[in-house]
Length: 96
Image 1 (cartoon, one colour):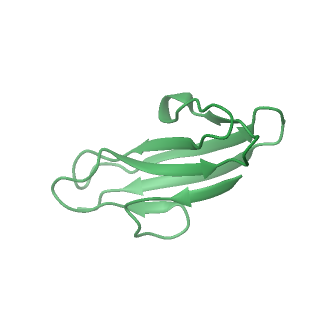
Image 2 (cartoon, helix red, strand yellow):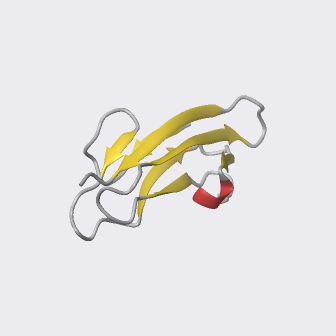
Image 3 (tube, one colour):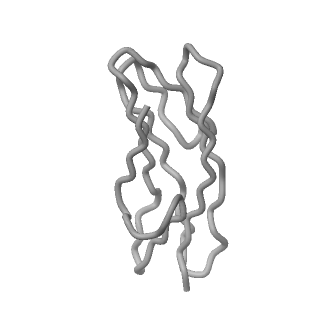
């Protein structure tokens, strides 16, 4: 499984900062499976339910307006056939 970040690309680790008056509504976080692997994610409200070989994509909500509290959560990704999960804390900021 491979973790891929798309846009916005500023920030460090798994802290993302969005700017501007019209930021995206979500920040995507993508896990790429091996060809025969099916991934499962939590929280399910933030991710898709991919088939075997398809990426697991989290759409982490972005604070609506500058200065709103950060969106904070923990992403959990694991193979459908396994019990070991990857847990990643994420914070999305929209600074004032």
